[in-house]
Length: 304
Length: 233
Image 1 (cartoon, rainbow over the protein chains, first blue to last red):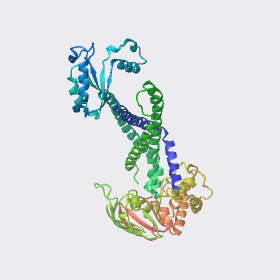
Image 2 (image 1 turned 30 degrees about the vertical axis):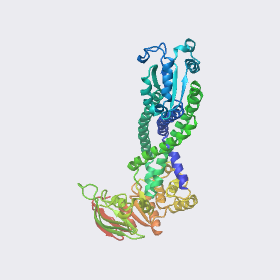
Image 3 (image 1 turned 45 degrees about the horizontal axis):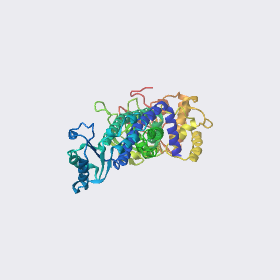
Image 4 (image 1 turned 90 degrees about the vertical axis):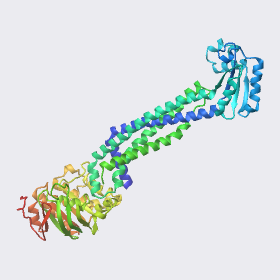
């Protein structure tokens, strides 16, 4: 009975304040979409880290004809120099850091290049002798890159030592900044949402002050008087959170799944399943925001 | 049922107290008029009984309990034992007569079956049988006040407080309302009615408690209204 009564009160409250309720829904929708987007970016970064860190290597590029580095002043790498580099890699001092290494000849490099830029016209104009040969070194601990760098940079015949992880880190830092921007926008929108929920509840309490006044007089409990208002805010916020979840799912499914994944087939992308991880958090966040802001508002405007 | 023990209520330090060292007792089943001019402290008395305000000094006892000691979460229970009627009826305009009365039961969680059974009964008590489905704006002032009374007593409170219930009504209609209040009192409910309607007070010959500027000046059984002090109607 009491439940039916409270539900009825909520229904009439939502109807009476329809325009405010719609604005609460939209504001929570937008703010939680940004929160969720930031979350998905973080998931994507983790995904890529897991995928790439296994594959990344330190590349020790050797000198070619066209090299301009100071260490390549004596021209392309010689057979002795190459053998010396290989010996250094095998020496116990270095081997303890090295998991595996691979020699990539100029022909191999051309093959990889062609695979990577298969769709680009640049492929036709590149020849094997323009590409440097290299040793691809996998480290036991990727953090020990500096050691390898120090040892090999100074060896004759080495043009440059490149930590591929660094390239990835740059990508990740861009993604981190993007998720930071999303979180900042979300924070502002959440403040808007809280204020808007507070205003809506206040209006709602004001438009029903006759009812609540009578409820107080006949001895209705605080819960019965306040719950409809709190739930009104919570319901609006949860609808906003659901809309945000659906939007994020659609982005994951159609933008990332159908488009991005096809554009970059060699990159691991998060799937729409990750939204299942984020959606409950968004709904919880929406509920808590609405609950807290309406309780604080009611404490001031609806004394029992 | 209601006991005031040297109660003083000060709203604003710079003005005289709304109630000044008032001591009185209303027993179970009593019918008492609270008379006095506007601003004499009648409404303050009612607010203190309902614990809408707290006394600055002294103690207010309702049903043997010092209201100052009732924690805020128990205040609804206190109010369930007290019905209140106002000069301006305070009905919900979008609910029918029966809906208005049922509202008081719904909000304290009474069952649907009980509401269906009790509401027509109470409407009969106040003389509104057959008007269950009318809207408040279709009723006369007297009928609206009867609805308000029905709502106040539907949960069977031990006390009925009426704050100028006939203030907006003509003398004939007022007498009808007084008959309803009298009948409720006959059924054992303690009734305290604040008024400055001398005709009614003189006609009923009930206990009269008179306040002047917050001071209790007169408390007599079967009294009459003496309009000489301030409000002469």
